Length: 231
Image (cartoon, rainbow, N blue to C red):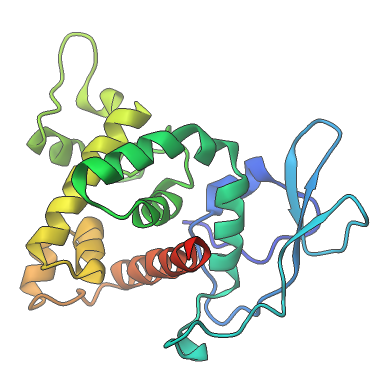
């Protein structure tokens, strides 16, 4: 995935949406303003835009949460991701589906939001090089385990482009992983990324895969902030 720096002035949401879930270790938190242009397009900038801008991230908002060390705080990009999630029409379009799936399968809705932000930046048409599809980047073989089958009308991959089906399938899988690993969120996320077999082979630890370790950090950083905002 492409790495996301603190946004340059007037970077439009349509461009930003492709890189919502990425992080840059050690990036300092900066002020970020939200601006709506004359065409109604939401944009973000780290340059003060004047009276029309709304400050959504403050560089002073760096005090650690209770019980959390400053070193473990989410980085600037996690803060930016959370701000963009709540301002994104793409998120608003699936908010109801995420809430319904969270309730149906007993998964924290904030965790689902963090997974979708990291996996696809709320792009229902996203397809990975490995063939994972949609908002939660569900593999067709995984979907088949949950009863999604191809027919004359569409392949499994095509069906997974449907946001509701994708969210339902991905949430069911994540819920099963949480149960499998005793509610340990980080292990469930590692399994979601690398497969439950990889976590088991690692002795029920996060596998020593750079991609998987980075993935878990990204999702957990966003999840922590979403929970803090909800509280």
